[in-house]
Structure formats: C-alpha cells, structure tokens
Amino acid sequence: MDQFIVQGPSRLEGEVKISKAKNSCLPIMAAGLLCNRPFKLNDLPDLRDIRTMKKLLFGFGVKINDNAFDCSEIHSTYAPYELVKTMRASVLVLGPLLSRFGEAKVSLPGGCAIGSRPIDLHLDGLKKMGAEINVESGYVHAKCSRLKGAKIDLMFPSVGATENLLMAAVFADGETIIENAAREPEIYDLGEFLISLYPQLKIEGLGTSTIKVQGISKHESNESVKYTPIPDRIEASTFIIAGVMTNSNIVIKGCDKDHIRSVTNALEMSQANLKLYDNTIEVLPRNKELTGFNLRTTPYPYFPTDVQAQFMALATMINDTSIISEEIFENRFMHVPELNRMGADIRLNNQTAVIVGGKRLKGAPVMCTDLRASAALVLAGMIADGETRIQRVYHLDRGYDGFENKLNVLGCDITRESSHNLIASL
Image: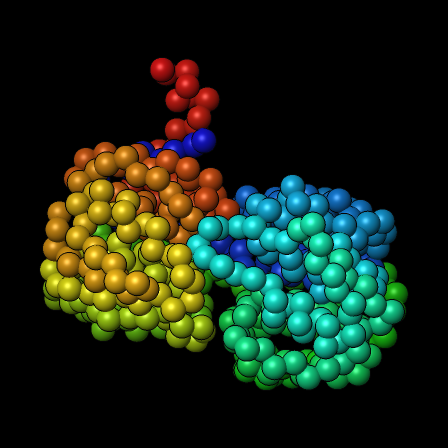
C-alpha cells in the first residue's frame, strides 16, 4: 500500500486547477446505461472510483475508449460483488438498468466505512414504481415489465436514492414525483446530463426538494453527446482550507463559489481572508487571528459532511475551542485518534467533537480510514513540525485527482512512497 510522506510546516503559493466532481461523474457514467448511442464526458478525473466504474460498465458490455462510451450493445445486467464492494456508487447502476432493460442483479454496495448507509430508500422507491425486488445472498434482484411513474416521499434527502430514482424515472410510464429530494449540485448536473441525452425529457425542480420527471418512450438515435461535469466542490473546499491553515496566498481556479457557500461562509466567520469570484477563489494571508467555530453537518445547501474532517484539522491550530457535530454518518470521526496522535486535543461525546485548539502538532505515523479523513491528515501534516507518514492513501486516491502533485506545485513537501519501494528498502 502506498503512503504519503509530508514534511512540515508548509507555506503554499501559486494556483491550482480543480478537477471535475467525482460525485457528479459517477452517477453520470451510470446514467449512460440509459443511452443507446455514444457519448463523451469531458475532463473525467483520473480517480480510483472512476476506473472502478469503467470496469463495471465494461462488464455490462459498454465499449470504452478513454472518456468516450458506447452503451448500445449491453449483454449483461449483473454487477458483481468484486467491484461493487469497493465503491458505494456502483449501486447507481440499478435505476438505469431497471428502467432500460427491466432487470438488474446488483451486489449490495461497499465504499468508505463511515457508518451505516443502507439502500432501503432506493429499493422502496423502485418498488413504488412497480419493480419486483428481492434481496438474497448479498445481491439485489430487481425486475419489471416497465416501471410506472409514482409519487415517492423520501424519509431522508438521500443523494444516492434521489439519483437512482431520477434515472429510473426516465423510461417510466407517466410522471414520477420525488419529494424530500436531495438538492446537491451533483443531482442538478445529473439531470442536465439526462436532458442532453434526451432533449424531449421533462425534468422540473432540479435543485429543489421536489423533482418531477415525465417519463418518455425508449427510442434510438445515432447522434453522439458530449458533456462536461461540474467542478468538485469538496476538492475546492479542501484546497481552500489548506491555504487558510498554512496562512498562504493561493488561487483555486475552476470552481463554483455558489456550490461551496456554506464552507466559505464558515471560514469567513472564523476570520479567514478570502476573495470570491465566479470561478476562482483566492486565499490571502490573514490579518486577524482565526476564531473557533460551532458547526454541524447537514444536507446541502448547509455544511457538508465531506469537509467535516478537514475543518477538524483546521480547528486544531486555532487558539480557541471549536465544536463539530456529525449528523449525517454515525462513524465519521475515525480520524480523531490519528489527529490526537499528532498532538491534537479532540474529545468526543457521541456524535460531537470538541476541539481544544492551539496545540502545536508534531509529525507522526498515521493511518487513513476513509476518503475525507485522508485529506484531513495531509492538511494536518502540512502544519505539523517534522515528518508525517500517512499510510493507506488508497482511500484518498478514490476521490482526489493528483492530490500530491497539485500540492507539490503549490510548494508543499509531499511525496508518495509506493509499497514495492518500501519493501525494497527494508
């Protein structure tokens, strides 16, 4: 397993270009299963999860040439455990396969071990649309003659359930209404991609809690489609926090400030010095001491769970007490023991973390436990004294495209040590 070696403390300077959003690209790739003609996705990031999704689609019979896809000759609707176990987003093939082909056999999903994330909402919604679903031996078996439009009221604004049901509704008979739908920009992006595939498709309410889809009949076309997904708001947030933590002057380009408003608002309330433009955010050296914060993770458009760990790394250096409550996932504080190993003072009380800041971090060997925790440990290593060795960075490779290379360009002393090089040195 590869590891990162970070020499701290760091001071950053320069520009970084944000990659396209993993959490947009994955459902969009799955949505391509609805299409019987070629399509191309511009600027797909080079991520482990993207490669896994390509393998999954290839197994269905999708022809893939770089970032061009042809789903016209699907010969399988079976998603095996070997692939699905490594990436939760694999379950997003369920909706489009069922909508287009009337059947799917998909393994129950895996991904980061950040808590219980059942797919009951996905399955309940599909059942309301007329699907016959059985869960047996770790697989979801789904069948239907043709899905029917239905009104579905989600108990929680689940991003994955909203995406699966949105895709399932494309070829459903009649209107599908999703109430309490997730409002994330990635869902809006998915809807725009579906419309680019089928311009006659009517989708109302993207970006709101009520989405209406008027299903269409399947039809064939040879016209290819090109689409560019939105930038990654979590990657952008991570680099902004890196600039704030190192008291640097960096420019984050190719992002959408409206997608990260809750993050930049929280940083500015803590006295971070930011300049916001439409597609660029500049982090400037602060002219005031940072102050502590009290945050809780909630669904978009509010404070995102995917930057909770990065904010916790930031809180360790603030000469104040901060409080973070995690209300999305019950097991997303696994980075706390690792930060404490570096000298942080973080105390847990159920789903709330109290961070007594102002402690000088020191480099130490630490271990990644999930995707966003990995980024937080890198940020902590950047402000720590000495060397921090961060193990199991394959978690980070799932969601950050060329992370260490981008940090190196900004001036961070970070290197990747591959497992075979490590063994050879012993």
